[in-house]
Length: 142
Image 1: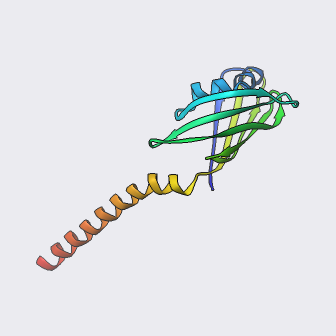
Image 2: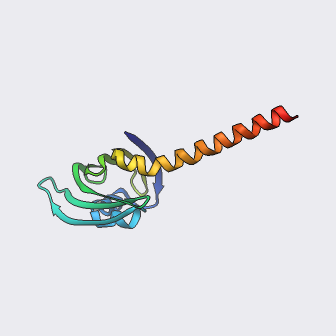
């Protein structure tokens, strides 16, 4: 499970920030690796459910995002299911300006972790081994 938490001040009132976040199509505009949001449907709680397509290091991840908690101008919690599972929470505070707290807790599929992280770990280990041997040579030859 990965967890990310960030805060930012936005020179817009919470109602405007919440309204922007409340439209799933806007997340494609602000989330770098989010490729597409489709099949948006309204929920009885005023929230939305949609399909997402996210690209991570050349791997397409598809699934569904659903608003599971809404407090207009204050809080929005979304549940992710499918290739990425977890939650994204937006907490808004302020009146004329917004202090936004973003927290994401998510799980990536093992196949993605292996395909993305394995090459990085392999390159790191190769550099470590090479440096170790070079250090040994330098130590013994001097």
